[in-house]
Length: 404
Image (tube, rainbow, N blue to C red; front, side, top):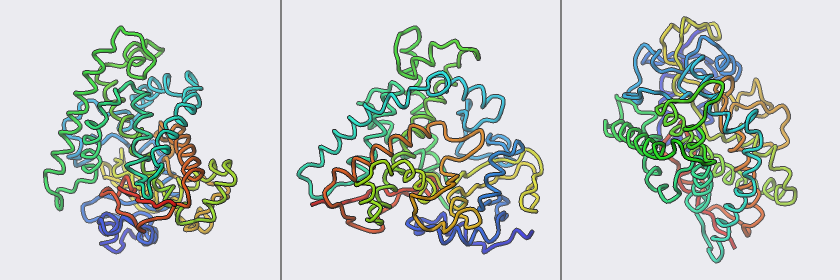
């Protein structure tokens, strides 16, 4: 199969002007399921090929296996498990999961529902008397940040510090040395260093101390796999702090934007709160918080859709494109909370399936149910709203909404 396509399609997707609606460009990408780019990387854009690669043991998540190193990971001596391969990935993920979910902590996420609802109620009560709110600043950001801080044991008053770090890190994920100022990369690397130093300081205080937060449990746990090193704990906490709120902010905000664009679905949810479970799954397909996995490395030569991808090549997986693939989903550009067989790629797949997916689902279900129930005739102030810079973690940076 030929691997040529319009040479500017990916560049147009990455360009900020496409952030409000990249989906027509994804359709262009899918005309060539596997396409080599000018820099030698490969873009994979169709559902079947993406799903197969996410389960392919010859695909590496460790950027150190790339023929050309990624500058955004300079100085990362101990990668988080999301950037590792088996057996190290499996060991670290298993050790973290002992305290986060099944089988050892099956009731953790469900047990947080009451606290989550209380946080949401406090935030929504703050809307009283306001004719206009910003769904991001007033709700979608503070809610998951409060939850993940509580879970990890990070003092809530320190949130403004790591808010700046996360912004710099996310902004540097798609750093391109040919087009971006070097400050973008430097700010991201410094933010990674500062956040790890901060988490290391918190961890030092937890050794030998009792506590139910995740940092304390990891610091003092001797399970079947032994105990994580301090560096491994810091890397895990660093990952969870970012992934535990950045993607959820986007999912909640994209969800509210989608509902305001589909008032008949918004009214259905108001009348039938039970609709929220399949509705969130459709959001993960239709307007996912993560659009692109920007790097995977080929352990060896891999054949995908009749295209040979050489060992060491960088591979970009266009998750949001795969979830709109008409060869997999009927009428993929239609938002349909009644959709059946909705095996979307919103949380990835395979061994790297999103670690915090169950928590993000529950947070979004609670958030959207309460927003729809308690906002009085909400209306968009601007459509499209302003978007974040990142094409990878895509969502509005602000979502102003008027209410009666």
